[in-house]
Image (spheres, chains in turn green, brown):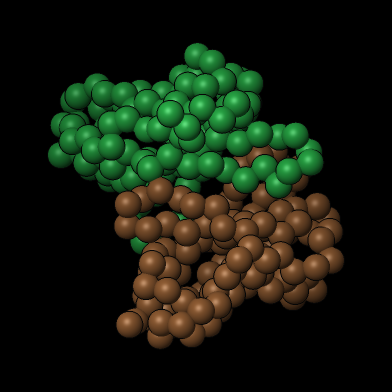
Length: 115
Length: 115
């Protein structure tokens, strides 16, 4: 496998459920990101990890809990979500070598519906 | 204040014609990068083209070119010879190099190519 892989692609959950989104990158990158994409809104940055360390939390509610066990894997743990959290959650990775533009490589996203 | 502005929610273009998608940005940094991404209905964000703030030449990648006007803080995407497969959402994004690797995205433009 190559690129950035996200699972599951679709998830429906109730407000009391606990679920997790998984992201895996096979590109040897050292940075990973979670973005939220709601309908008719720009992509919103949620979390940034560099070399497994969280470097940014963009005022995300605590019902979203990220985990980065290594540079290749990123999780987003979900609990007691609200219907307005329904969105497409995109994972991305990048490298910071200075010589390249450092574009983000995205997965296909996990479409979450909260009932 | 919004850092990236895309003023065209939707655009139509005839197949084989050229189209320009607008993007303006706001930054006080001297070092930054500008990106364009395409998002088909499948959800994946596909990197198209990059322009660095110090690049003197406009970036080109196949049928994509970036009309970079630094003084006006604009970075418009030009797609030449439009194809039906170009129908998608297009996002402009910026990375300020002193802000790490994160990208800030605009609201997007939905492009529809007519046969």
